[in-house]
Length: 417
Ligand SMILES: [Zn+2]
Ligand SMILES: [Zn+2]
Image (cartoon, rainbow, N blue to C red; front, side, top):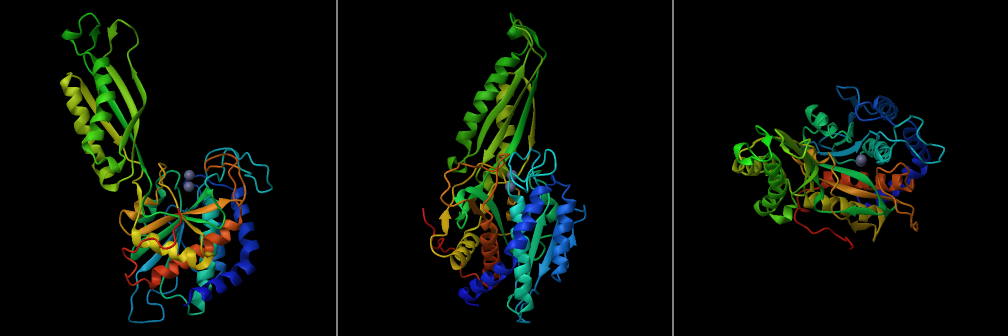
């Protein structure tokens, strides 16, 4: 299908559904639900999809849902095409909504400050549009909508994977609101776009003793100091600097009095990383470095490493596909290069097993000079971004279904900046 036919179909769909979708987003915004408690949101999305003739499946824990649109061979019975998945996240943040708007949160200490209400509405609208395309025989394969719970808890993507949510999926796309870009713009990046952020804790212990006689015990505070300074330094010499693997301590504690060597101490910090391979190797490498410094000073070191999410690494073909999709339906100048963020995003878990891309959906009012960020209690969007997101997601899904591998290894088309 020609891109201009798709653009015209999207125009017609949005002219009919834009008001309803904005209303839908405002309702979600007024009724935010925290990670793993997105029951109302799940129900509302499921009811609307069902009303459109689709058959959503609620995930086993009762929050989150999946729905397939179209058939995997489209109109061509011989060509089994892989499914293209589109993902949105449903949950809100545990913080107060400080905006003065009619759709302000009605739930104390819960706020859609990360824009997941927008993501959910964009995916719902995309699903309604694609259902219409499928009914008209215009969808060349099967698209799966993944309405994922619990992104902010970094566990929802794993629940989707455990529920078989990306079985037979060949490629996956997602959008995330970005208030640093204007509504109408899409930020795209090939390679890492968000970072891993894990937690590290080191507990050291020794016999303790008088500070007059460190040689008769182990000088625990000195050893802890060595771990704090030498491990991050050694780390930077043991991994490729381009992976940006860094360990930064946030809490260190040992001892109670000036003249006694304590028998225990603790250091806690975060590991951030932009490279998937370095992320996988980080726990073993850190354990080795900590053990070697601790043993040099005779202290015992217990090390615990808490995984959060991997870095999100966009595959080049998928980034090119969503970029081409956006240019086709939004026009020249709509796609911009987006920088890597050191924030975490659990979409990364999908990209550990299938190719895909996360892109940034501009939500700033064009011309506005206000500096906003997500996770702020006043975060809000230019709601025209909803229609923009639907255009991009629908077009990316259709591009993904038509893909025959020829887009692999092409540079991002038309990316400015
Ligand atoms: Zn967030
Ligand atoms: Zn988010």
